[in-house]
Length: 134
Image 1 (tube, rainbow, N blue to C red):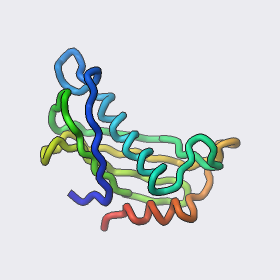
Image 2: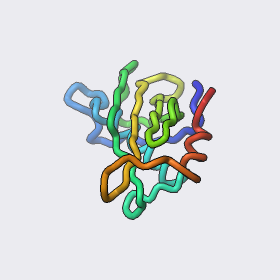
Image 3: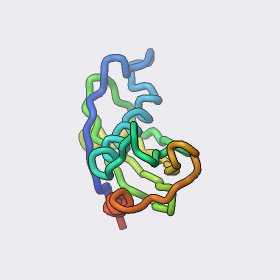
Image 4: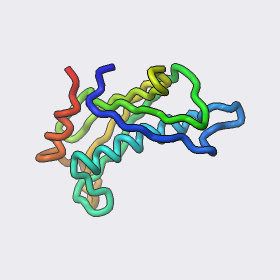
C-alpha cells in the first residue's frame, strides 16, 4: 500500500446521499481532515495563529468502490512531492482492505497576512520528509 501514515475516521449518518452511498464530497472531507490532523499533531501547524498556512490549490479523487454509513474509513497518507513552498499529498481510502478511492491534495504554504508563498522549513519540512515513500 505504500503509505507512511494511517488514520481512521468514522462515517456519519448524514454522509450517505440519496443513492445510499457516501456522497463524493465526503471523500474529500476525509482526506482534508486526515491531512490537517497530521499537520497539527505531527508537523506543528498552528491553523489559528501560525505565521504560515497551507492553501489547497489542487485536488483530485478517483473513486474505486462504494461505501456507506456506518463505516470506519482507514486513510493512508504519504507525500508524493515536496517543493520549497508546496507539497502534494497522496491518499488512499480503505474500508478494511478494500480500496475505496485514491486522491491527491496540493498545498501551497503562504504567509497568513500577505498570502504570498513562504518556504516550508524546520520541523514541518522534516515531518513532511518522513512521509515521502520511495
